Image (tube, rainbow, N blue to C red; front, top):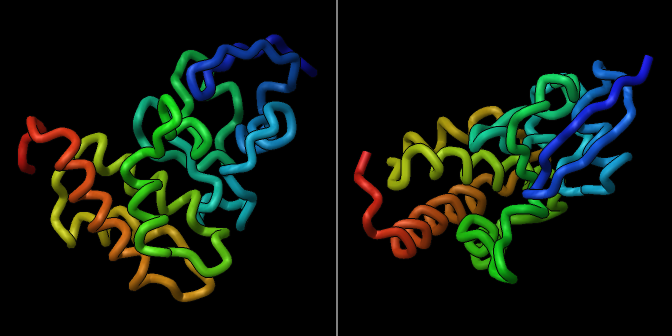
Length: 164
Protein backbone atom coordinates (compact mmCIF):
# COMPACT_ATOMS: atom_id res chain seq x y z
CA UNK A 1 0.00 0.00 0.00
CA UNK A 2 1.47 3.32 -1.02
CA UNK A 3 1.46 6.47 1.07
CA UNK A 4 2.47 10.04 0.45
CA UNK A 5 6.02 10.34 1.76
CA UNK A 6 7.86 13.66 2.09
CA UNK A 7 11.65 13.52 2.11
CA UNK A 8 14.40 16.11 2.25
CA UNK A 9 17.45 14.81 0.42
CA UNK A 10 20.53 16.90 -0.33
CA UNK A 11 18.59 20.05 0.51
CA UNK A 12 15.70 19.33 -1.86
CA UNK A 13 12.18 18.33 -0.90
CA UNK A 14 10.51 15.36 -2.56
CA UNK A 15 6.95 14.07 -2.45
CA UNK A 16 6.68 10.39 -3.30
CA UNK A 17 3.85 7.88 -3.35
CA UNK A 18 5.52 4.69 -2.12
CA UNK A 19 5.04 1.96 0.47
CA UNK A 20 6.42 3.26 3.81
CA UNK A 21 8.40 0.08 4.38
CA UNK A 22 10.41 0.51 1.15
CA UNK A 23 14.12 0.55 2.00
CA UNK A 24 15.52 4.09 1.93
CA UNK A 25 18.32 2.86 -0.37
CA UNK A 26 15.77 1.73 -2.96
CA UNK A 27 14.10 5.14 -2.91
CA UNK A 28 17.39 7.00 -3.18
CA UNK A 29 18.70 4.92 -6.06
CA UNK A 30 15.55 4.05 -7.99
CA UNK A 31 13.20 6.97 -7.39
CA UNK A 32 15.66 9.84 -6.89
CA UNK A 33 18.40 8.44 -9.16
CA UNK A 34 21.18 9.02 -6.62
CA UNK A 35 23.93 6.48 -7.13
CA UNK A 36 26.39 7.43 -4.38
CA UNK A 37 24.90 4.97 -1.89
CA UNK A 38 25.50 1.44 -3.17
CA UNK A 39 23.73 -1.84 -2.59
CA UNK A 40 26.34 -4.04 -0.95
CA UNK A 41 25.22 -6.71 1.47
CA UNK A 42 21.59 -5.67 2.02
CA UNK A 43 22.07 -6.36 5.73
CA UNK A 44 23.52 -3.07 6.94
CA UNK A 45 26.91 -4.67 7.58
CA UNK A 46 29.22 -3.48 4.80
CA UNK A 47 28.61 0.28 4.77
CA UNK A 48 28.31 0.74 0.99
CA UNK A 49 24.77 2.13 1.40
CA UNK A 50 25.64 4.72 4.05
CA UNK A 51 24.00 8.15 4.09
CA UNK A 52 23.90 10.93 6.63
CA UNK A 53 20.63 11.43 8.47
CA UNK A 54 20.74 14.63 10.49
CA UNK A 55 24.54 14.42 10.29
CA UNK A 56 24.83 10.86 11.59
CA UNK A 57 25.83 7.88 9.44
CA UNK A 58 23.01 5.43 8.75
CA UNK A 59 22.72 2.28 6.66
CA UNK A 60 20.07 3.01 4.03
CA UNK A 61 19.59 -0.62 2.96
CA UNK A 62 17.96 -1.58 6.26
CA UNK A 63 16.03 1.60 7.04
CA UNK A 64 12.43 1.89 5.86
CA UNK A 65 11.87 5.20 4.10
CA UNK A 66 9.25 6.13 6.71
CA UNK A 67 12.01 6.46 9.33
CA UNK A 68 13.65 9.24 7.28
CA UNK A 69 10.55 11.44 7.09
CA UNK A 70 11.17 14.75 8.85
CA UNK A 71 14.94 14.33 8.80
CA UNK A 72 17.65 15.78 6.57
CA UNK A 73 19.19 13.08 4.38
CA UNK A 74 22.55 13.76 2.79
CA UNK A 75 24.12 11.46 0.23
CA UNK A 76 27.56 11.47 -1.34
CA UNK A 77 26.16 13.65 -4.12
CA UNK A 78 25.05 16.26 -1.59
CA UNK A 79 28.38 16.65 0.20
CA UNK A 80 29.82 19.05 -2.36
CA UNK A 81 28.68 22.65 -1.92
CA UNK A 82 28.77 25.53 -4.40
CA UNK A 83 30.96 23.55 -6.77
CA UNK A 84 33.50 22.64 -4.05
CA UNK A 85 34.08 19.12 -2.90
CA UNK A 86 33.71 18.35 0.78
CA UNK A 87 37.11 18.12 2.53
CA UNK A 88 36.59 14.37 2.93
CA UNK A 89 35.93 13.92 -0.77
CA UNK A 90 39.04 15.97 -1.63
CA UNK A 91 41.17 13.97 0.79
CA UNK A 92 40.07 10.66 -0.71
CA UNK A 93 40.88 11.93 -4.21
CA UNK A 94 44.25 13.35 -3.11
CA UNK A 95 45.21 10.09 -1.38
CA UNK A 96 43.98 8.04 -4.35
CA UNK A 97 42.15 5.91 -1.79
CA UNK A 98 40.27 3.74 -4.23
CA UNK A 99 40.81 0.61 -6.15
CA UNK A 100 37.38 -0.49 -7.35
CA UNK A 101 35.69 2.36 -5.44
CA UNK A 102 32.63 0.42 -4.34
CA UNK A 103 33.28 0.99 -0.64
CA UNK A 104 34.14 4.68 -0.94
CA UNK A 105 30.61 5.96 -0.41
CA UNK A 106 30.49 4.34 3.02
CA UNK A 107 34.04 5.31 3.91
CA UNK A 108 33.51 8.97 2.98
CA UNK A 109 30.12 9.18 4.70
CA UNK A 110 31.52 7.58 7.87
CA UNK A 111 34.46 9.99 8.03
CA UNK A 112 32.15 12.97 7.38
CA UNK A 113 29.80 11.80 10.17
CA UNK A 114 32.73 11.55 12.58
CA UNK A 115 34.03 15.00 11.62
CA UNK A 116 30.54 16.45 12.08
CA UNK A 117 30.70 15.57 15.76
CA UNK A 118 34.44 15.27 16.44
CA UNK A 119 36.28 17.84 14.30
CA UNK A 120 39.77 16.61 15.30
CA UNK A 121 39.49 12.89 15.97
CA UNK A 122 42.40 10.71 16.98
CA UNK A 123 43.68 7.94 14.74
CA UNK A 124 41.91 5.46 16.99
CA UNK A 125 38.61 7.32 16.57
CA UNK A 126 39.08 7.27 12.78
CA UNK A 127 39.71 3.53 12.81
CA UNK A 128 36.66 3.01 15.02
CA UNK A 129 34.48 5.09 12.65
CA UNK A 130 35.63 2.99 9.68
CA UNK A 131 35.61 -0.37 11.46
CA UNK A 132 32.31 -1.58 10.01
CA UNK A 133 32.93 -0.41 6.45
CA UNK A 134 34.22 -3.24 4.33
CA UNK A 135 36.73 -2.84 1.51
CA UNK A 136 37.11 -5.99 -0.57
CA UNK A 137 40.13 -4.65 -2.47
CA UNK A 138 42.27 -4.11 0.61
CA UNK A 139 42.96 -0.39 0.19
CA UNK A 140 42.75 0.13 3.93
CA UNK A 141 46.14 1.86 4.18
CA UNK A 142 45.15 4.43 1.55
CA UNK A 143 41.72 4.86 3.14
CA UNK A 144 43.29 5.60 6.54
CA UNK A 145 45.69 8.04 4.87
CA UNK A 146 42.72 9.75 3.22
CA UNK A 147 40.83 9.88 6.53
CA UNK A 148 43.81 11.54 8.21
CA UNK A 149 44.10 14.01 5.33
CA UNK A 150 40.39 14.78 5.71
CA UNK A 151 40.91 15.62 9.38
CA UNK A 152 43.73 18.01 8.47
CA UNK A 153 41.77 19.69 5.66
CA UNK A 154 38.65 19.94 7.81
CA UNK A 155 40.64 21.46 10.70
CA UNK A 156 42.30 23.98 8.37
CA UNK A 157 38.93 25.07 7.01
CA UNK A 158 37.29 25.37 10.43
CA UNK A 159 40.03 26.44 12.88
CA UNK A 160 37.51 27.42 15.54
CA UNK A 161 36.47 23.79 15.99
CA UNK A 162 37.34 22.50 19.48
CA UNK A 163 39.75 19.62 20.06
CA UNK A 164 38.07 16.43 21.24
